[in-house]
Length: 118
Image (cartoon, rainbow, N blue to C red; front, side, top):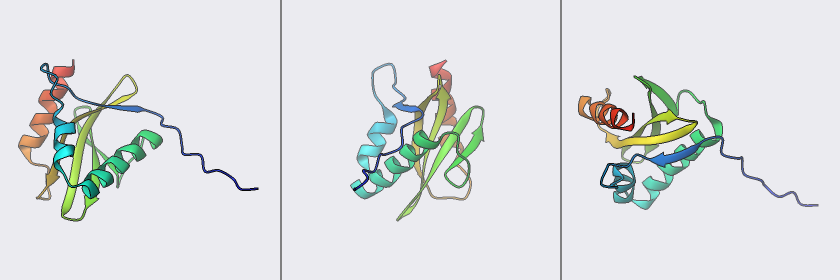
């Protein structure tokens, strides 16, 4: 008898942060990336959904209630900053890292969007 593979159930839902005009900046950013890169980042987000809470090397706290999904992509490192709200992952900001430290403006963008949620 052949056993069917049953994918793990998602523990938490994920949603995109939406501005008051309905714009979803992380969705727009993801759509601007190559399909292969989108697939890597999407797979990492799914891993977080299925295994939350997770730690390094995939997820790291960046303080103030913010976490980052750390995706290794062919041309560098992608980050998606999120927060947890009502057992839901809210994707606040995404970017490709070029330096060792998180750029100040990227963290500030995520913090501003987090404030807009509350």
